[in-house]
Length: 459
Image (spheres, rainbow, N blue to C red):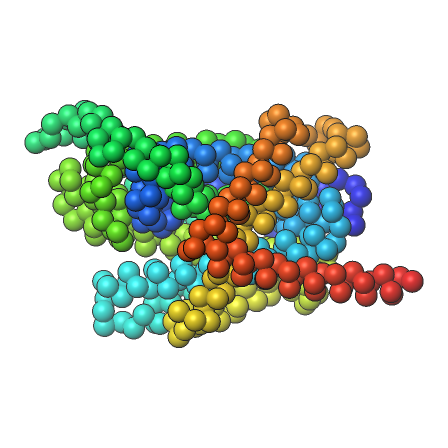
């Protein structure tokens, strides 16, 4: 275990710029979960979905602030895996690193398959598996090239998504005030009609939190990428500050526009609420426009997850928690074997998703369903331990501080625990918690055996 909080020199390239990092923070989170999945949250919470997003967003903000504090003080490509190892021991770094890697390569299959389904709708003559192959080859090439190429890919992907949301917010506000042609002011009637602002009471808001909290997953990649910038400590602080506030604005602002323009009861299952709003205000081909945005969002997330998984497994190899053969770096500073290992497992996940989507792959998806919450929990515990140590040994490294320490850290931990309890009481979510707990238990068992063997060797 590393006792010193001092940052260690990263052998990887430093080709990412501040603008890449900021957009990565935005792009890693704004995905299909927002554009399509938010409809499920509106169905259970009604207009109260705005409060659900505020609560879930506040929890994500606290976690990112903690992670930002540790990453600014100790930048590393393994981010929270490295922090967990320094705070709690090798078993913690090993466990959280491998769980996060497994989660990314499984989710990568969902994104590749989703993007292939949309592309197949545009070009039915090309088989779905061919599209998956094309996407995986293109993004493998992008990740094997210099890291600045990955940054450029992600920058423009994220810029398109951000631009789409800003345009949506502008059109929505114009519709609310009746400025658009052939429209009357909507007013606030949709927020208070159809059962009021909380048609299902606070239990609906709580159920909404459960539906939307995972939409905030992906922000963590910023702290992984920060290690490949020229000035990691300063850049991570700036990226965390800006990304979290902007995402909260985009998410909450979008939901407020959606439930103000249309009655929440008008939302159709499976149809993007964004499409419903654009259709209602007369935007032609709204469905096709949103299809393009979702397509870009899926490819952007695929790109970011491939990057994050390769850097996490590389960091594990650096610390002896993964095969040393993964440490091979190209002349451009890219961990080539780590990228290929992540792609290879991602390919296996995609094949399982295409062949057995309702059996084998469903079990894998359930096994990572609650892993994000376990990772967030370990981030909070690590921050509780490391903050005191950094204050004692090198307080000048605390360029970004967690608000209200330690009380807000405990609030975040309680919030994470509350969401897990809610998932256990929800029939649809319970299998995810149980399977994820099983997967976590298996990884912890491997970590325990490794620790026991290491002690025997030392003895």
